[in-house]
Length: 139
Image (cartoon, rainbow, N blue to C red):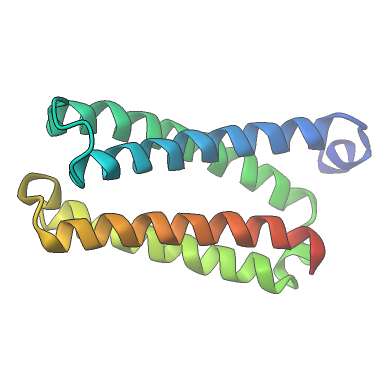
């Protein structure tokens, strides 16, 4: 199955499109929520926006994770030897820890300075994940 994925002229690129679409859903919705928490769009209720944007972000993460696992399965040896891939995986772990910390402490209800720092940190981590994802092809 995975050799067919690599030998097809369109399968792997299509999988990359799915992966990028998932990342766009994820990061776009996290940034949208962050902008609201930092004061833009003050007419939008935070909790309702969070319910929508976090649901869409989770759907995006699911798409990105599923497609990423398929891409990984098609060339695991090469990816495990790639420093950008390793850093990307560490950053994904950092993003998960930050999200767990954010939701575990109820930051969305507090919306205090620490919550804003956590949201900014989340965005920076996800942007670094994007950079590492692009570097995979070049290292």
